[in-house]
Image (cartoon, rainbow, N blue to C red):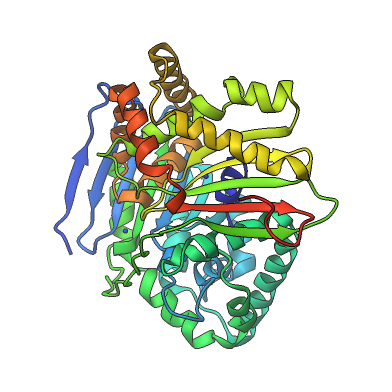
Length: 451
């Protein structure tokens, strides 16, 4: 399971003819051409040549995460397959798969989130054909017995039990299940506990889940490093070209409009008090300025160089940290402002101070110089992080799982340039309302101590 989403939340947050496309790099944050080819079966192939002699990152993105788990009693299966895909095939059982990776000097892993499951391998670019062979085999020929299924389901239950002992994880689960009443974002990537407990009895359903989502139209191959698009496209056609397209499309429920503030609370003594303000935000779009504007605004209001951070953390020492961010997700998700509070009796005070800052942002324009500096830091920080095949492939994967198009990375960062103080006031007015708020707290109290 990928806990990056939870960590971000705590610190605050898918048959066309073959088409070949190559992007220009002028005025784009990623200074490397993105080559794309869509195979006849719907598989998207993305290649970015990068100066990393002898090294290549090979990513397979499946645009199916906990969001796609729409059937009652059947949550946690996207994450389950993150585990199960390493169980092997007739051709390459688990041990053989591991031995080949070691022989190639390659590493492989996977993680799951709300909107996708991601498999990644990094190794010798000269062995790219073997990487393709291994991954094509398990994506098309995964095979496991009832015994293997139950063993892995038990391991997933153990992982859930271990993680759920963490009060932060408990609050995260309670918050999303309180904030969402219909949409599948109401459950985490681990799934609801009752479903995880029942998972060993769901062998037949697991086969159905794999058959639905491990299909070319849900999948994108991303290869970055010492490679050429010609070679990557040829290998994709050779190993994945005969992979049969599926037909399943989940009916994702629409979340009803929230009308009043909700509360999620975890009673925990001897643990740092914690507060999160979770407002309903927008779905991701690489054509709309709202999410970039929200991230600029929350950075200005709550980053370590902000006035409120200085007041609550440095001067008054009522909070250990404050932070905020808007979640990038395929459907409308949460904008979270969070604080680790020193004393339980200060939770309401800190909540009031955070709310004051958000309300002030609705009518008081932010300093234009600070806005420009924040834009520059955000874009510069991202650009400087693009220093390895893995970093580039991971960033491309993130925007591909959101829209299906890796060019969304460049499109999104280009939006930052046009954001003004008026845009920041507009998103503050639009999203920071009590009607869409879910308050999350951890404290020794029986109920939430925050109004």
